[in-house]
Length: 240
Ligand SMILES: *Cc1c(COP(=O)(O)O)cnc(C)c1O
Image 1 (cartoon, rainbow, N blue to C red):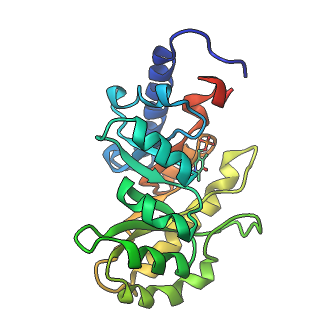
Image 2 (cartoon, helix red, strand yellow):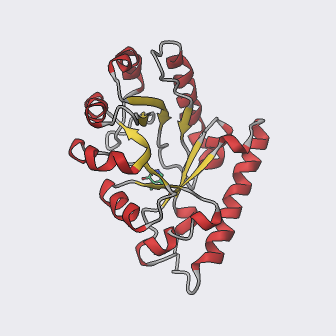
């Protein structure tokens, strides 16, 4: 796709309207309330001036997949933004990342959970989602689905971490319908895990669905969709 020349704002506005419309239609098909689905604009390919247009267009939830890029954009963009880390977090980057983020979608090991618990401020517990490698691709991060039942009781040992749900990335498919079993599987897994949850942990959220498959994910219960390409493709040198 070629770069978009001129003012990116109207293009972004149009693309946002389309995504929101499709989310609303998917909610309608599934008998859900569109208010229960939060659009996270994943800005990893958007230059900061393009990302900075989002709050005025009503998007306050922004996501980055690399901690360093999140640090960089968080310093450049206004404070009202709720930042979501959606990619792998190394333990040595936890301390610098935690104060900047509202939600970490990509907690993929017990060791990382423990590291976050050790660093988080008790007066501001860290909200996290547990990433699940539903498609079992070896190059993907995440807990294996069968690992999670044993993790649930251990959540009781965490003082400063609040497990708010599960996240997954579906395998790339030409036909998004083929992602449906992955998304339905994440929801079922969550429902099963819920019966042995200690304390505050409710697993109320499901983060699933990206540019190519978000409508199916919403039909299957996503409460967060993580959209990059459908909003930012061609809008700036980093996203061309
Ligand atoms: C890049 C990214 C997205 C957005 O993907 P698009 O296909 O560009 O919408 C979502 N989630 C994660 C974890 C990502 O790294």
